Image 1 (cartoon, rainbow, N blue to C red):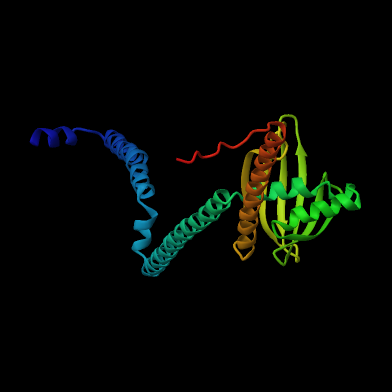
Image 2 (image 1 turned 180 degrees about the vertical axis):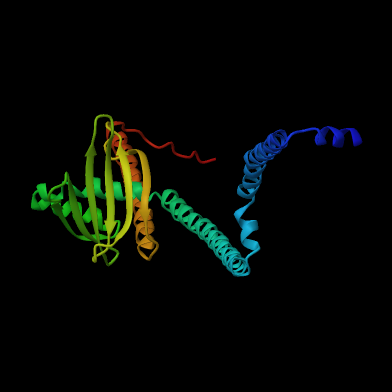
Amino acid sequence: MNIFLSQMSNLTLGQVILIGCCVLIAFFFAALVWQTFVTPNRRKSQVDESPQDYARTDPFLNHTLTKAEKLEGLLNEDIETLKKDLDSERENVTIAVQALKNIAMDKKFPQTLFQLYSEMKSFPKKNQESQQVDMEWHRKVGISDLEVHPIIGKNGIAITFVLLRHVYCLEAVLHNYARIHFIELTLMDPSNQKLMVARVKPDEVLGRVTTENAVMEMTNGGWIDDIIACRLLMDRRQAELDLMTGHHEVEKLKSKFKFQAPSKKKS
């Protein structure tokens, strides 16, 4: 220390000033380096800090965030409740729709409507005598007051008829595409409300037989009883027709072949 002081005492004023300037410059550069490397790191740490954490330090912002979180929780609960209600409703509707479809397919509703269309579509083209015969045929399944009209603007017909004392309208529209051919059958009540919409694909050979059928729309109601009754009456009418055909064949055999019934011998 004494040696340093002795050396400093030997320095001239100019040398002392020069050394002082060098020391000041060294401090200046040290401060500049500190500002360059240390301060950006502090700013970066402030930027990396979560805005949520920063807001919590402010009483007003903290209160606002707390209310927002409560509101978000209530909204999420409402959405979850709506989702559960929607899932429950979807399940109930799916069950109801499947039940209606099962009834329609099991009771042959599409085939019944197609058979009505097939038997009635040529009614206006027949003479009065043939129409009377047809009406007797239709009455066996509960049908009366039959009218057939073309549908304007569509390839199809509209059939108005009374089935078991209730008025119905059956629209049949033909759809022909490149490889798709089907008939859309729509059953309506007098107010033109759709009761059932079915699509059937007729057999190209047999005509009145469907190869494919599907129920597109269906409304629950008393009309279902009428269609079920009509289907049962159709089946009974067909059974009677088959029996009559068999009876005629037996009568023909009897007329062509004469024979005597074997008599019982007396003992």
